Image 1: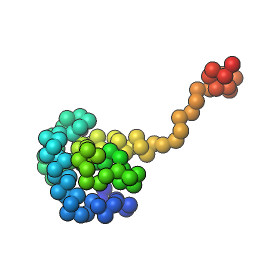
Image 2: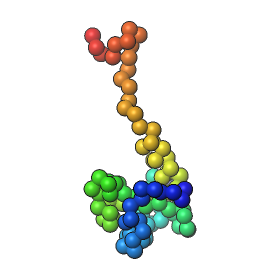
Image 3: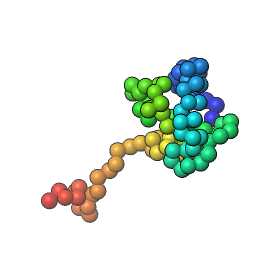
Image 4: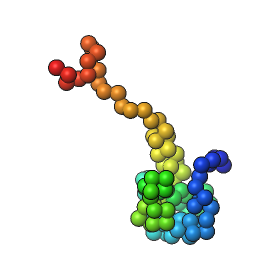
Length: 99
Ligand SMILES: [Zn+2]
């Protein structure tokens, strides 16, 4: 949990701390996915809708959403699963709708 090797330096800036607190307040300290309360240390995650690496605005509240650690983990495991979806293949080995 402590190792976020490629975490942006933005997350260590004071501006981020302020923006993060503001985003949480705007969200009423509630997870946007499951509605769990986010008050308390280590109980909240503030996430960029468009990742900074993809040009998302780091300090724009419109690009932030607040979620609880378990929704955050779920989201990351979905992202990490990766791999393109395989098309449906019929018994003869042809993609469905091929004929
Ligand atoms: Zn949640």
